[in-house]
Length: 370
Image 1 (cartoon, one colour):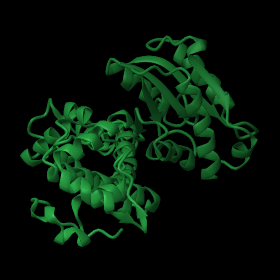
Image 2 (spheres, helix red, strand yellow):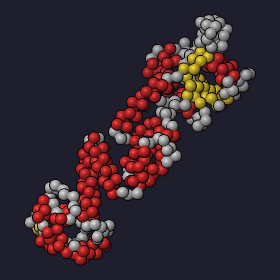
Image 3 (cartoon, one colour):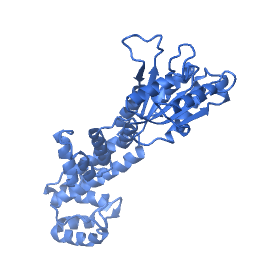
Image 4 (cartoon, helix red, strand yellow):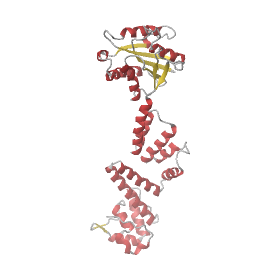
């Protein structure tokens, strides 16, 4: 596995003058090489000035050129952190900014199969902590955070180089966001957050894709998303999506109703009113079609409207006669063109129609306000 190593340079790098032991940078690289990791690139951040670590960075670069590393100069980049941090090496904000610059440089060398190796044991305490902050913030999703123990303080049961991890903190943040997105039915956003957080699994991706496509009324794609996972959804949900794919009128009406409820819960009141209007029209179309027994079928385009009204007059003469005298807001009802709400309501026979000759039709009575 190719590794890109990032580290601040400390006063104990590459070798401690006091203990003559390897510093944390060399110790980490030895560990990675022992674990069969190919060192692709090393990025070293050093401070400047009288008490800076530039000389230590140069020594480290020379040390890494020798065996067992054999890293050429072009594979070990040393960059200054800037005057601000060099003069204030305990400022955590400046340390994070410098670490971010090093991280951006490393990402320029990074391929999908590479891993960022973050050394949290060189430099001042705030420099060491900067890598964990960046990892927890999600700036280094495919990374490992390493710590190197002081050999003078290491116990017999402890290893010198060990991995830490702050990504769990980032994942907790992401999970909080995902849970809110699910409560808001923002399935596409939840899917994107899940993937960026590295928490996605095939089953979760399928479920969120199903939810997003279903809300988008793309029922065929929603069904296809869950098809490879027969146990993910309860039988009820599978039956519902199958009915929607088959364009079952009652299933479509239920879907329109729940879509309106979702818009209302999310305070999208304009969309809610649109959904309610769509539901009303679909409900009226469904009930009129039931009342007419499918004869004539309701027009799907303007070109079919003339044939609809002509056939209605032939098949249902009493209804046609009634419609000829029906008024909506003191105006005669036009028996032509599309079936708008007044025409649909008139056909259904609400309120005023209950005593008309054709009231015995098996029509579901609706209380509809004109």
